[in-house]
Image 1: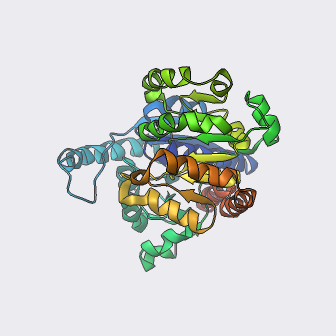
Image 2: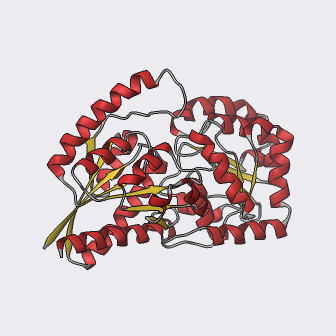
Length: 383
């Protein structure tokens, strides 16, 4: 049986790791159908996702993480030497694995793996999930055989030479998200909520968001008067948030308390949460594509510090499609936050339009498209 070795590269956040897992799953299925034995390894800094990667059949080779910024920052004085060490690590570790293809999701640490792969003339595929490509993506593009993008709006940022290699794929989503889905009413009941009251799901990204958490704390007494709220606060924020929310919950009636629940992180139950939601409040990173795939109205709060302001760009593109509303952090007030939520939930026509436009925007087959290209490349090289 022929063997296919795949190297994955990407920063150690959920926005990088989960798309890699989605592509890995589809590639495994496609390779099995073609009687290809497959070996997969992640090169980078997996952080808390090491176990998740290994549970999905992807071994881990740690590479030091470094980030080179487009702007002047004293941290570059540390990260530039670290990048040299990362490159040496990547050259050494990639040599002993020698993959048939490298698939990079970008982020800190990925560039060293890309350069090492280019040195060894290993075929490189990259993926960009933002409407404005990152510095890593633009720097990697010249070495790539294929460039997959989630937004058509990102294409003009690439050079004419690189643009011919672009495939508009969407953002890779795990197929497990769409298996055995229940109806929204049944899912709300399954999660312990009242199916007769709208459910607002609040997410702050894979790490949580202390500022979104603060918005919810301030707005909670008003929100639970009419709505239910399921809130992902982030694993690192959980203990502090639990202490801060306790006195607020104590001031609410028993009925209002039952309408609010917070958790550290959505993982295996994400598909149930997405299905049950009537409205999702979220950052506008990779979660945007999950929201779109489930066809849910949303209120997006871009992270203002995101590199190259890409979250604001993402949200504006998505809003221009009619799929969401936007609230920037600088404009926050309880009245603004609550009124934007009310405007969507109390307006059935707007909700349906947002849901419809979200479904049109979402692409569930991105991981399959990328997996097919990986296996086709391997088949051509080995056949």
